[in-house]
Amino acid sequence: MPAATRVLRTGATLALATVLLASCAPASAPAPTAQPAVAPTAAPTVAPAPASPAPTPVRAPQPTPTPGGATVRPTPAPVPTVASAATPRRGGDLSLILGADPLTFDGNAEPAYFTFGPSAAVYDTLLNRSMYDLSHRVEPRLATAWEFANGGTVVNLTLRSDVSFSDGTPLTPADVVFTYNRYRDPPKGLVSGYRSDLAPIDKVEAVGANGVRITLSRPVGAILDRLSVVQVYSRKWIEAGNDPSKNMMGTGPFTSTSYLPSLNWKFSANRNFRQKGLPYLDTVTWFILKDQGTRLAALRTGRILVNPSNLSQLTPSERQVLNRERPDLKTFPAPTQFAPWMIINIREKPLSDVRVRRAMNLAIDRQGAIKTAFEGAGDIGFFMQGPGQDWGFSKDELLKTPGFRASKDADRAEAKRLLAEAGYPNGFDTVFQSRTTALFKDTAVYLTDQLSTIGIRAKVEAQDDASLFARGRRGDFSIITLAVSNISRGSFEPSDQLGIYLLPGGPYNWHPYDDKSFQDMFSQLEREIDPQKRTTIARNIQQKLLDDEPGLFIAWSYGYLAVSSRVHDFPEGITNFHRGHFERVWVTQ
Image (cartoon, rainbow, N blue to C red; front, side, top):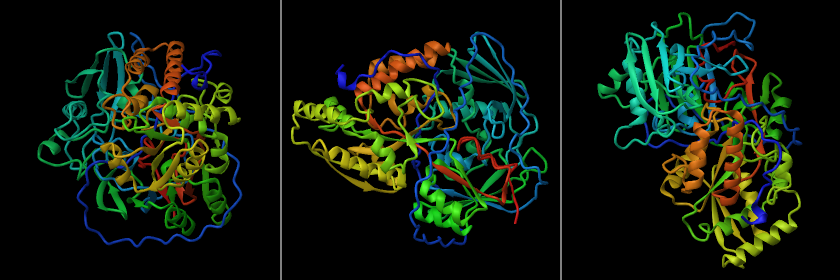
């Protein structure tokens, strides 16, 4: 391994849990339902403002391990800790920002926020990460209790007996069995985003009138996280010919009532919801605002009450504008932080040469990226080492590592040597395909300048998510700007997220990266329960990724979300994927 790409393996072994984020446009288009068009709000000019200091990182909750042979029962759901003391008001609409169109309604086909976030109001999962208890513990949702048996290879769950789908038909164990089998063995033409996560499941069975037994091929430390993201469908509804990619019907507090592409997606209260008197809201409306300026304008004018996702997060200067103009609008650090991740097409010359990819990594001034592209709101980091986390390589180790250290003279000299050795002494031309969000676009533009220091001539093509993700799936790209996250898809388990990006068949492994030694280490990480041993495996994985450079990890960025003072009991400190039920949220005039 060249010294220029090696990280020190010494130092204290740290506790592990981190993740990657794939936030993307889904694969097949739902049929729109007609409703009056909503005129989009024009984006006003935003005066520049000085950068705010970086927010304090939010500590990532730890994954809930599967015990090796112990029987575990859940503790009762905690009392909300950030709820409003005022008496809830019934009625009204909760308006939120959605940064892209959901081109499918089927969460089985696409585990991306633009589908999964809004659909959490319609569908339930067996378990959930608490929205209000800030420890974010796993708590009941459709299941009231669960226990492990047979050395952690069996999970027995008890379902609620008072749950009906929005059409009035009762939830049964057969619906859960049908759902999990559909995720594990999807219909022809559907690529399940969770199939690899659920691969350790051997069998799902109905047990009596309200029981479900899940049998695993081995203990899986992430199993409770995985049971908290699989949305449960009605077997009867799908077998009657309904297409969940175009329509929705679940047990959650809301029903999907209309969708207009590029305008809005509207939900209405489910009056068959199991908790009488809930939800408080009449409707939830997600306004599809793809442009950063339009999103900011909607918050400034009060058209939108909530900006809930780090996929549309505010920059520090945008936050200052809102704090000055809209003091009634609360802005706060996003509980999930992003790091731009440049997916490299390693089938395409010259990017197929690892020396070229290592040279590109060495050329990047990451401290400069934080100052320039992130407005100063960011920090040095890498996979499994980031904001609020104590896993993997320490920041001090990274700051001594070629490519991550502040001094660039030696790094760029080595980068030029590697390019010449690979046969490209004069560099080459390439293209960054970028999302339109400021973080991604600004980072891509910054990287073109950085790569020019070693002779690589790059340009940026920004495009909407649907087009960009279609190109990624076709392999029609050189470099695509996406992101990793310290918390993603509602899971706090690192093996879940590494798999979707870096394993063969992973829904976002567009590189495509296919390395046997990485796959062996991933398998060890997934199977291992002992935290210290998992940490050692994780550090080996980090080193492997630094050696192979299937993509370019830039740095962690910090962004901000916003909630109007009219909105009460909105769960701020939880991930995008768990806060979307909204049954306890209420609004005032």
